[in-house]
Length: 440
Ligand code: ACO
Image (cartoon, rainbow, N blue to C red; front, side):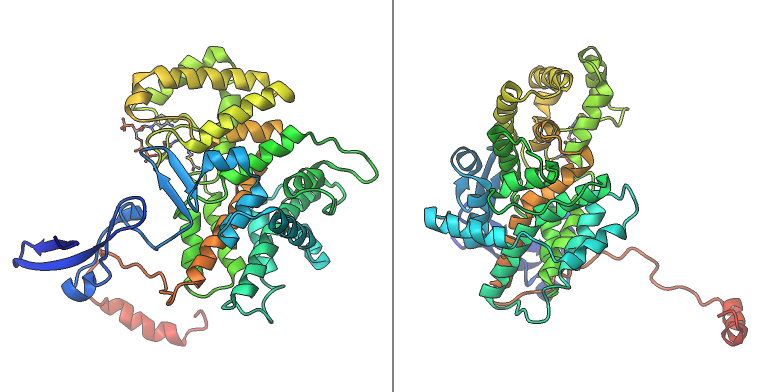
C-alpha cells in the first residue's frame, strides 16, 4: 500500500496525492509542501493546531499518555537522576555529559556568567516597577550588540559558544534586575557555586554577610528549571524559530521568544495560580470558587488546571507535587495556601466536571507554590520560566541552523476584505489641494 493520502476536489473531481511522513514517535504527518503548486489552494489552520512546522529531534510529548521526553529521556527519570546542568548539556550538545564533560561544562558556564559592565547602565533606563519580562527582553536584545561583529552564525563552534554564553548569563541578568529594583547592591556570580545555587546567592546575598541556601532549595529550583527546559513547538519556541528563519541574531530570536512567553496564556500562569489562591484566601471559600469554575456563564477558570496538549496527567506536575511535599517538610510553605491548594486538588480529582474534561493539575499549579517558598518575587515567576527555557530555545535555534536549507517562515492567509473599492471623486479633488498644503 502506498504511503500517501489523496485529496479530491469535489468541485471538479480532480485528485491529488500527498506523501505521509512517519516520525520515530507520535502522529505521522501529511507532507503538503506541494499543495499550493499542485492545487492553487492553501490550508487553513488557525493556531496551527494540525500543523507540524518543522522536523525535530529534541523533545517529544504524548499528551494522551502524559509523556514528556528530552532527546529520548523521560522527564521523570531526568528529574530523579540528573541536574539542570546535565539537561542543558543534553539539549545543546545532544548527549548527557560524563563526569569530566560535566565539570568542564560547569566551568565554561561559570566563566561566562558575568555581563559586560557597560550593560549596568541599561537597568537605570527603566522606570521603577518595570515588569521584569520587559527588562529581560531588552537586556537579551541588548546582548546581541556585544556579540555580532566577529561572530559567524553559520559556524557550529561559534554558535555553540553563543548558546552557552546566553544560558550562563540569564541568571545574572535576572538577579541583577531584582537587585536594581530593590535598590540593593549588585552581587556578582560566585565561581565556587553551582549554576542554580549561584542564582539564589545573587538574589539573596549582601556584601560581607553569610547567606543561607539549603540543599533542598537548590534541588527544588533546579528541578523547576529542568522541567521548563523545552516543550516542543509551543508559542515562544515557534517565535524563536520564526525569527531565526530570517537569519536574525540568535539573541534577537530569544528576545522575541521572551515576548511571546510573557503573555498570561503562556508563561504567566504560575503567577496566576498564586494570585488566585490568595484571592480564595481560606479553605472555607474553596467550594464557592469551584462552583464558579463549573458555571458555564462565569468566565472564571481554576488556574493551574488543564492543558492544551496533556489530556492525561502533566508529567511535570507529578514531579513537582512530590518536590512540594519535600519542601513542606524541610522549609515550610505558606500553610494556608497549601491547605487551599490541597482542597482544590482533592475536589478536582473526584468531581465529574473536571474528570470528564480531563482537567488535571498542570506544571504551573505547584511551580508557583515552590517558587513562592523559595522567596522568588511573584512578578519574577515568568523570568524563572525564561531561565529554564533558554537552553531549549537555543537548542531549537541550533537545530534550525543545522538544516540543509532554511526556509523563511511565511504563512499565507484567507483574505476576506473588500475585493475592490470605488474611487472617491471628492477625495481625489481634495488630494490635489492637500498635496500642495503645508499640513502634509
Ligand atoms: N477551570 C475550569 N474549567 C476549565 C478549565 C479550568 N482551568 N480549563 C478548561 N476548562 C473547561 C472549559 O470551560 C471547557 O468546558 P466546556 O467543554 O464545557 O466548554 C473544557 O474544559 C475545555 O476547555 P478548553 O479551553 O477548550 O481547553 P484548552 O485545551 O483549549 O485549554 C488551557 C487549555 C488554556 C490550559 C485551559 O485549561 C485553562 O485555561 N487553564 C487555566 C489556565 C492555566 O493553568 N494555564 C497554564 C497552562 S500550562 C502552561 O502554559 C505551561
